[in-house]
Amino acid sequence: MALWDRLKESASTMQAQLTAKKNDLTSGAFRDSSMAMCALVAAADGTVDAAERQRVAQLIATNEVLQNFAADDLRARFDAYVDKLTADFAFGKVSVLQEVAKAKKKPAEARAVIQIGIVIGGADGDFDKDEQAVVREACFALDLPPHEFDL
Image (cartoon, rainbow, N blue to C red):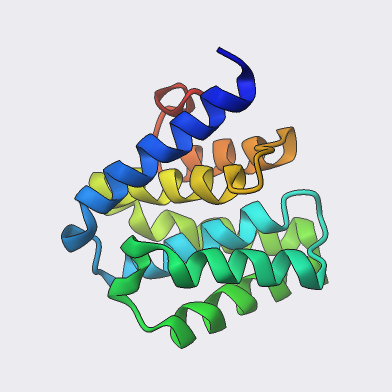
């Protein structure tokens, strides 16, 4: 199976798992952590152009699992995290990873945050090395083994 096909299948499987857990993913910690994860993936290469910001915001707004939360609230949180990362990526990443770590107390939420990062990263068909690296860092922040997610 080609890498592209495996990536699409993995993202699809993770989205199905997330959807199955939708009713359990309603806490503020999950909301904050998932938006921080989306921002990390969007800014993984150190920059986020307007088109990429809009594309990720659209994915957030249409993701069934995230519909437990107000779309405007999610967008504001995502934008705030992206702003931190684009102002000073290294410093912003420390702060944003602390937000990701908020989901650590509930293992199901922590895993869901990582799955969202993988779904967002793979949405354009190219879950690149920079995106994989920030998702791996998020795994460490959440005390999850990256190999559990094939990272």
